[in-house]
Image (cartoon, rainbow, N blue to C red; front, side, top):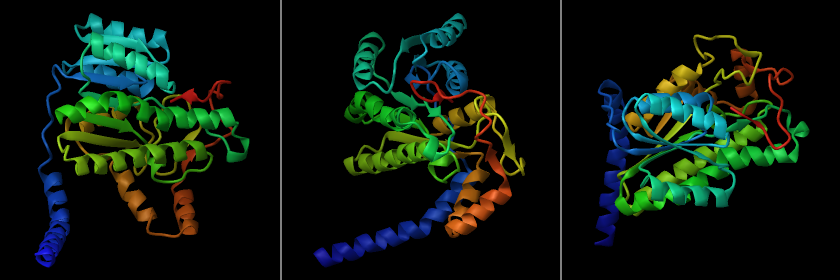
Amino acid sequence: MGCCGTIFDTFKLFFLMFLDPFLRCARCLWPKSRKSIKGEIVLLTGAGHGLGKEVANRLAELGPVLVLWDINQENNEAVASKLRAQGSTVFSYKVDVTNEQEVIQVANRVKQEVGDVSILINNAGVFSGQPLCNLPSHVIRRCFEVNSMAHFWTLQQFLPRMIELNRGHVAAVASIAGHQGVPYMTDYCASKYAAAGMMEALNMELQFMGKKNIRLTTINPIIITTGLISNVKSRFPCLLPLLSVEETADAVLRAILKEEEEVFIPKRSEYLKNLVECFSRRTRFRILDWVGYGFDPDVISKQPKKNGSEIV
């Protein structure tokens, strides 16, 4: 019986492996319809500026209850006030997502004042852009605390209820830099690799727990022109463009509404990543150098602050 079971499981596995590319093609031809988030409680970190601000504006149009978190209270409240004036239900909280105890305290307030968060979007991020040997230790720590560790603190507060209900959605804004090394971004790449790896492991964990109705979405944009980094360049902008905050926010929202597991923005950046990974490190460098995509680390419009990196 044990031998027969093993043979049957092996047959099922190979059949699924054979079927997988056809299912992928089918999803491309007949994409999943967008879900409704009207009335859902959506918590967004890093909502007071840049990408988070634009995502908040687009979410508000769909009728959820928005919970906006940001370390900058003034910016966060400005976003919330604008959306309230347009008729949206919005709650704003000042939170340093790197402070575990503060996250716990504010999360408890959200549960009491708003309700159970059903969609969590970990968007807050920081960037420095310096050679590894020049990176101060506090900048490295801050990069990991915001881009990686903060995901653990928010998930530990809101995921248990999702598991209890077997319902919910977690989205993480990672980066193409979480899949491909980039010069002068060692701390940023490492922190984004960590975030992407955590989401992949969590997906496996939830599958083993049988919580298949909790959706995870990992979002990997390329360089976004937020004004933080100047002198960004792309030798072939038709292949690898410099993304605007607005178009990135559109893609983020689309990925969440379609419950996509992992998206690269733009889509063709994923194909380039997969191609580059087939070669040795030396050849990968030659390809990336030829593409001419990146920035000059000596020309950054905002220098890192004393308490950490600037927020992207």
